[in-house]
Image (cartoon, one colour):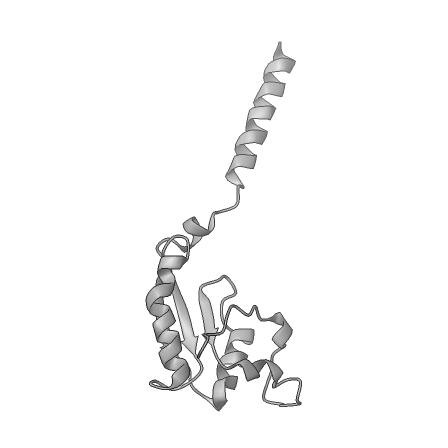
Length: 130
């Protein structure tokens, strides 16, 4: 009888331990958080306008509906932002960089100021123009 009780207790403990390690859902992760869209250009420019328009509506389309806040980090035509994203920014989905498409090619064309590997970025989208 003791062996059965010990076995049952071990099984219950294993189930409780396993249920505690269930992955967090995206909605649970983003609920109550702030997502920053960091814009690599000055206020009032084309990329700034696009990013601020996207920020205004993006939170409604992310599970958990986080607050989305645009911030500017101008410098070196987006290169400062790309370096910061690669070297400093959190990699948990709470920071999105808004920069030009050509920023991906800077390391490839030999720009020594580009201290990042473009292949390590996750590219989300590009606003469409007509």
